[in-house]
Image 1 (cartoon, rainbow, N blue to C red):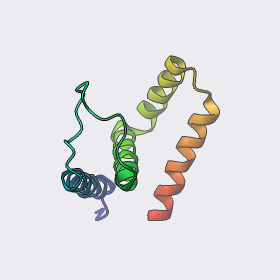
Image 2 (image 1 turned 45 degrees about the vertical axis):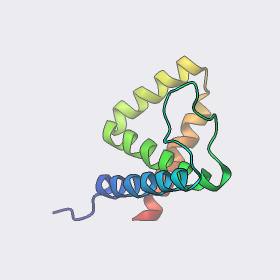
Image 3 (image 1 turned 90 degrees about the vertical axis):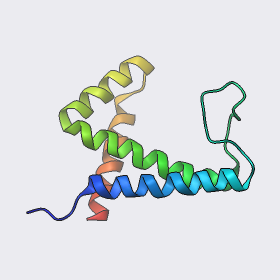
Length: 104
């Protein structure tokens, strides 16, 4: 039986990073992110680390849940829509693979 769950780890990290981001916004007197036109374009520099960590965890979770085949199809589709080269996709997949191996 597998006792290690990357999905649960990522969910915990997402919850922690979200809480940190919300607390930081609250301390700075800023509203929580929305799609409103009045929303600030960029978070303050002191919140960039939490933002990057949260984005990385949500990206990894999304790709992990898709699985290998759906991830490749998704990235290929993204590449066509955005004219991104496959070298970027290859780099992205390798970085996730390296990151995941270094955790285990």
